[in-house]
Length: 403
Image 1 (cartoon, one colour):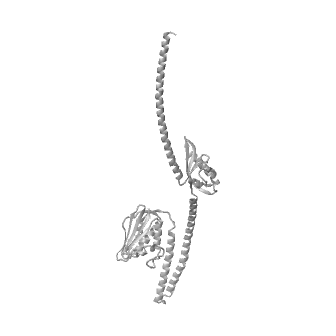
Image 2: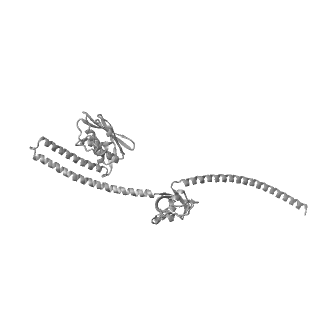
Image 3: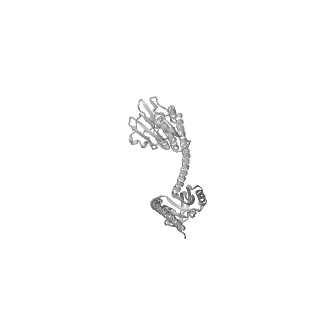
């Protein structure tokens, strides 16, 4: 081989050796970079794994401590996971026992549940679904379900749901509705009975009253003063009995909503009452603040104010009588007051006077029902009534009415 070829080969080997060293250097640098990246990746993975373990532990705690039953199932209804509340509700022995929720649906509700599950797949969530199930112990229960789909890369893979046993609540609701129906029927019968009794009792009273008047008229020159006085007592008693029957009928009717509620202008209502009621010349009625408009039955609200104002007037014993009506806004309610400067009421009677037939002052014009009617009307408007009084100085009745 010539010297030129030998020199050429040596130069080629030298270039190849230099290129190899350069490549090795590059590879060493890349290897170092990859190693460093690997270390960082392992560190990040370790941190992520620790975080996932911590999160899983927290979620597991939430899962186990949910008060309601919590169930995860596949799209065929097979239970994948459930908490202790679900185990108890569905009647399983433990959380590892296999079961299919669709097999537990009551036969009468299969069509309903199939439609609900279809909506769940289509919408992704279902709320407030109620249906019956049959537990592992063959016990029928009504359950309330809120459920949602679990997705993996956009595809539905499972469903999760909160299941609540509402069997007892539903039973109580049914009992409540039945009781309300019975109560409504009883109220109707009571109203009918009260009207019949009222008519049947008033008729003989009016007959007796007529007979007494005939006897007096036929014997007006023959009756002495004592007999006339006794006849007068009979007439007073008859009048009081008729008033008592009327008041009992009113009292029994107060709790029944006979009219639709309307906006009632209490200022106008009280103004009208002042012209209707008998107000002696020595008594004045004043409204301190303009009264509001509220929703209610006008007739009942008129009964309320009429009873309290009449009561105040009746027991004023001063030469100058005052009745003051006032109101203030308490937020959810209006607080009214009716104040007088009458004879007052001792504190020991403050509770008794609101009970039916508890009249403190016996009078032919008082049956002891007026304030019990007032309390009933206040109760219907979700309010309260009470009084403050000083004997011989006067009384203030306070009551609230819901806005």
